[in-house]
Length: 144
Image (cartoon, rainbow, N blue to C red; front, side):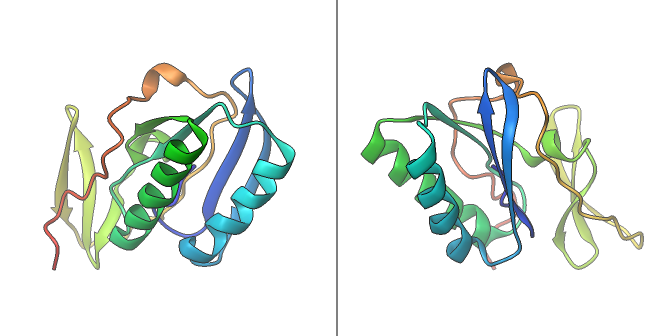
């Protein structure tokens, strides 16, 4: 699942292959319950893989709380990776002309006059070794 910016992207994987995807342009807090209601009614969830940041603070918070609640109540394992896995390691918007960049495994901020397109995509094949059990949100910037 990728909820770092709009649209919200959620994929269903079977044997690591993408079999269904959801694309929602609504607010994460509105879209998540609807998407997962459909998923829970139609699929058995064995584990959750998601992007835990960096990106929209509110989307990261809502996503983490929602998924953590599902994990606890349904006994489902959670795994996370940073958002750079889902956008070919392109800069991710932080604020106006400030972007998150990943260099040598570290996430930093970079101010630039260039504007980068925010394009995230679900992989067709889920490489589980790219994810960690450390699912804490990646806020990077201090709260404003």
